[in-house]
Image 1 (tube, rainbow, N blue to C red):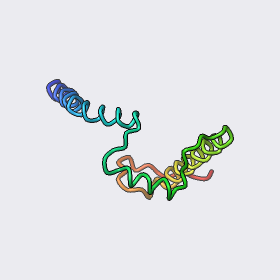
Image 2 (cartoon, helix red, strand yellow; image 1 turned 90 degrees about the vertical axis):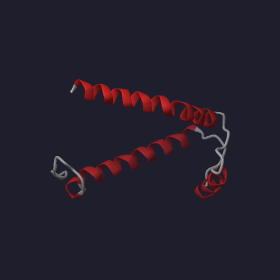
Image 3 (cartoon, rainbow, N blue to C red; image 1 turned 135 degrees about the horizontal axis):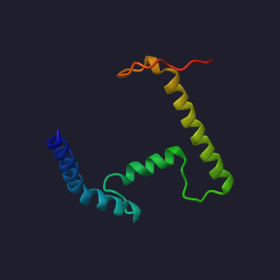
Image 4 (cartoon, rainbow, N blue to C red; image 1 turned 30 degrees about the vertical axis):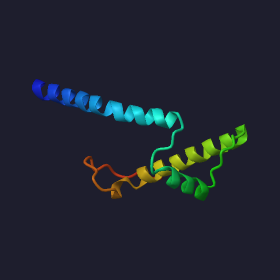
Length: 100
């Protein structure tokens, strides 16, 4: 069991070391606002389609966006918990939520 745990930790660290350089350089490009090759066109089309602009939000717009996303997340969580019994791949076979 100790050998298996050691191999698990060693493999995790090896994967972490292998992925550190490419993920780090990708994050550095993202922070420096350098567009990723091949993604700039898709991103421009997506921004135009969704109506995203480059201007700053005031506090009311920010509050509205924050509350909207939180309510959306709450609704998704409610649906997930309420219909838990009909979801696939649940090893504990927990029942769904009840109204009472």
